[in-house]
Image 1: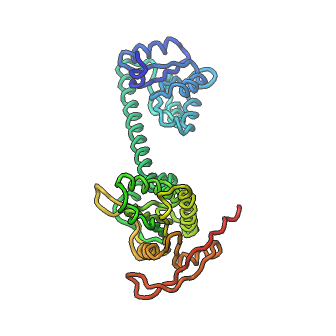
Image 2: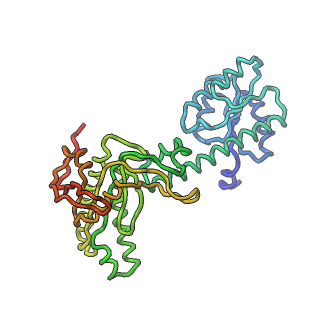
Image 3: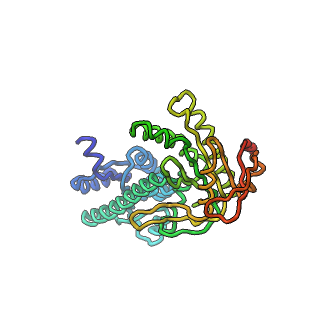
Length: 360
């Protein structure tokens, strides 16, 4: 039997302190194509679970060293093993014994002496449950992998805890800090170079800037040509969303300066960043088939306008952001500006320095 073929067979661990009982179960299961492992007491059973990672455990109750109840309790307390179905073999007849088994973590019971037809039916049923669980876990892992392209792993896990609520169309109004970062000079750079080179340079820059959004707990919204849109405060809000946006922007500028060192292609490129804080509607926009988790409203528009007027190497923030981070930054006010879509001038600031966080 090749290893590949063995791995495709359902793995069943049979645990009983009487070798004759083990041989009897093996004789019934092996012809069905199952891969059988054995143990003869509770301690051996736990060791075999670690070694073989079974899909099902057929577990006797009355055994030396450790009984079946305790084996089940320990497996259910193990986050990695708690989903393995347990079929308890018992000669006990009292209802309270079965209740004790269920409380310990048994999924089903089979009373001794048992017949082949009943054993196989219960085995197939429990293996089907395990298969469905594994398929669900695989889909969740894939979904988490997709989500972590847009948000940090912590936020992805939170979304998956309530996917019906967090992955449906629609949105909610919340206070967020929005960051737009644009590569200054990139349009001129792209006009003079091969498309493959342009794409390679753009991806290299994004591969440096994007992880910083996740490092500071932000949500990656989208790429807009040679620009990045991210926001902080959704789907999870915190008291320091504006600070995290500022620190992300500062880290982006520092990282890009380091990236430019010794790279002739990047010498005429710079990063301009705008940040605004306030209410926005955040949620899934699109269709049931294709949706985009994004933020819309006045706050994202303000951040975009600030980014557009920021010079290369600059970070511009609105007054709402400044009020939340004024003890953490050194800024220089700029002339009140009228942004497209605004009837009144807004106060804005150029960030000159971001102070290091105070050690806890």
